[in-house]
Amino acid sequence: NMVWMDDVDDDDEGEEDDDQNGGGGGGGNERQREHPFIVTEPGEVARGKKNGLDYLFYLYEQCREFLIQVQKIAKERGEKCPTKVTNQVFRYAKAAGANYINKPKMRHYVHCYALHCLDEAASIALRRSFKERRENVGAWRQACYNPVVVVAAAYGWDIDAVFNSHPRLSIWYVPTKLRQLCHVERSNAAAAAASSSVTGGGPDHLSF
Amino acid sequence: NMVWMDDVDDDDEGEEDDDQNGGGGGGGNERQREHPFIVTEPGEVARGKKNGLDYLFYLYEQCREFLIQVQKIAKERGEKCPTKVTNQVFRYAKAAGANYINKPKMRHYVHCYALHCLDEAASIALRRSFKERRENVGAWRQACYNPVVVVAAAYGWDIDAVFNSHPRLSIWYVPTKLRQLCHVERSNAAAAAASSSVTGGGPDHLSF
DNA sequence: GTTTAAACCAATGGTTTCAA
DNA sequence: ATTTAACCCAATGGTTATAA
Image 1 (cartoon, protein in one colour):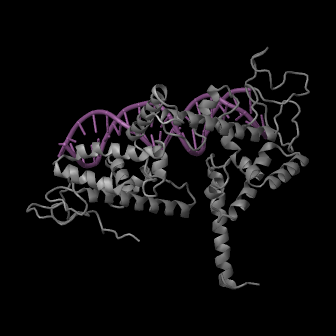
Image 2 (spheres, rainbow over the protein chains, first blue to last red):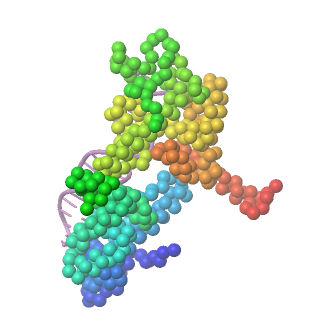
Image 3 (cartoon, rainbow over the protein chains, first blue to last red):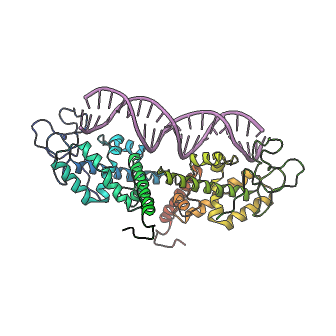
């Protein structure tokens, strides 16, 4: 179904003179860490020793494929079948040679991937805006929280329902911070509604 | 919705002269363990220091109500919301005074409750039969496995699908042994099918 | 012996620390 | 600023060993 890049390295071809991200175990056998992410627009190739956000989101798709593999094996063996990306899936990914996938990284950016899934237009706009302003990845990551909360508002701030509504997102645990933000926002909205019903109309009245 | 027995003790009124299961902290403060289960038919009152199977199944309903409470509280607080009867639910039950509920016991009889949910007629027939033969609870419990596997056969031996198909059952983890039995049975069926296709007709032919 | 339930265990989700 | 192995932690699902 999906096209798979063959082995350890799936970086785009770069233009820098020194060794690229790619190459696997070829010459130097020296690559130790992934290149840092930079804020890129969709389709944009990250130059230099950097990775773009398309690559980040692709890692989530890869994890999904690994989960599907793990599920298939579990069903064959009649064992318990995970519904989420668990430690077991991360271990499987490592064993399959995907050393560039690890739990802390994937958990770190889950809410960014969520925005990408839930509101692609908003996600793209945010990427363009932060790229233009030359913001770093950390700033972009922080900025991804609120748009997801806005999406959640339409679900009564039930962030679990939001995640479950999307098949590619439902396999990821809801990050604690995102859950807390939704809770706070719901409380605020409830307080605002109560206050307006005191100062003005009740729930059945227009207050202007 | 459901009628709740008021406090710690929900035993039926007994006829024995010595102290009954019930009474809570009344006089002796001496009750340490639940009375053992005996095989009873539906509606039958267990005499003596025994509990009947209606009571066993009622404990599962109680756990479900405790789960619903825990879920309600979690949603209010914006915390993670369990979908199954977890350690947290057992702890909540204890804290709510239901000392007679504990994890090992509930896990021990899950497949018996499953049969009760999935095929009440078969469950009742089995209870009557084992009561008649004066079998002990352990023997009845063992005998509950196979009828559940038979139900699972109709779901391609996918026991998770079986549990999930029933709202009261879906909140319980599938016991490992039951999962293994279904796996073995599926393998046997597959082997039989393969063998019959060698000796006789293929899947599209009648082999008799 | 049978049955109950406390106690235990490895592995989990989640996070922090720290080196590169 | 960013990555990620390593670590820690409480709490989990699951089971065993014990007690009654």
